[in-house]
Length: 428
Image 1: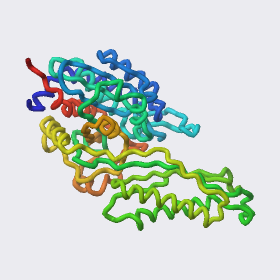
Image 2: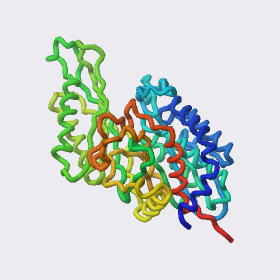
Image 3: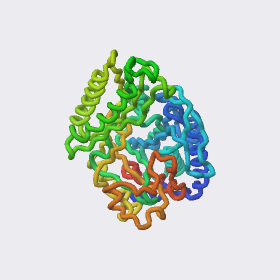
Image 4: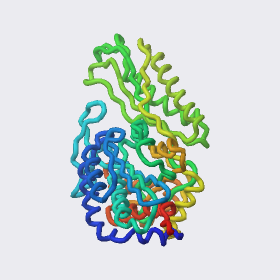
C-alpha cells in the first residue's frame, strides 16, 4: 500500500486539533523541567494519553511514560519523544517564554529552558497518538509511545533497567525524530551513523590552597586546570586523524571563591563526541593521561579524580529501514522537502538504546522548525557542509525556539508517515 494513501486517513481531524496542540506546546515550553525531574510534564502526558484511550504506565525509569495502543493483528511500532529541558536562561522574548528556575544534580539553582525543542517532540508525539486513537479504522498493529526522560544522561537505559523489555510489547521497529534549526517543512536523515557517541566526565583536581599573596606556599589547582584545558585541545588536533570526527569540550570549570584565595580544588566537566570506537577509546585514554600528567607536573599531592557521568552509543540508522522511512516521508512531503544528509551530526543522545536492547532496527530523522524567512539568501548546501550562519539560533541557544505553526503539524504527520508502512490495514 502506498504510504501516502496509508497516512491520509490517519490525518482526519488533525487540523481541528491543532489549536489544542499549540496550547499544549506553549504550556510545556513555559514550564520546562530538568532531566529526571520531568514530573509535571509526565503527568500531563499521562493524562492526555489516558483521555485519548491509551493504556498508560507512569514512572518508568523514574519519570518516563509509556502508552500502548493495541489495534488488531500487525507489527509493534515504537515511537519515542524526549521530555527534558536544559539549564539555560531563555532570551527568545516569546510571550510564553520560560522563567523557570530548577535545581541541578549538584544542588545549584539554575534557569531552565526548552532550548533543544523537546517540548516540540512531546507535542508532536501527543499529536500522533491522538490521531492514531481517533482513526483506528485506518491502521492495524500495536503502537508503543515512549515519552522519555533525560535523553543525554541515560534516560533510555534507565527505562530499560526498569523492565521496559518485559513490561511492554516488543517493538519490531523504533522510530524517533528531532526538531532542528532548519526551515520549517524540511526533513532529513541518512542510513548508518546519524549521531555521535557521547561521553561525559567530571574531573576534580586537588591542589593545596592558601593566600593569593603567597602562591609559593600552595599548589594552585586553577593554574593546573588552565594547563589541562589547553592541553586537552591538542587531543583532536594532534592525536586523532583529520579524517576521524571527534570533539573534546570543557564546558564547565569551577573553583575558588575570592580573588586572593587559592582554592584546594577545581572541578571540570568534559564532553567527548566520537564516531569510531577506536577513536573514542584513544580520546578517553588521552584525557586521563593528560589530566594525571599535568597534575603531577604541577606538584599535586593527590591524584585527580576522573568520574564517568554517562556514556551514550552512536545513533545508527538501519539501512533498509531508513530507505523505507525516507520513502514514506518523501511520498508524504515531496522529494524537494526530504534530504539525505551528507554526514552524521556530532550531537549525541540515547535513542538507539531502545533498538539495540530490543535487537530491532531503528531510524532517527530531523525536521525543521525555523522560520524559512531566516534562511532567505542562505545556501542550504553550505549549511549542510559548514553549519548555520551566525544570525540563526541553533539548538541549545538561549534564543532558540521552533516556530509552532506549522512545525507541530509537520512533526505530527512525520511520525504518522514514518510508522505507516508498518501499520498497514489488514483486510480479511
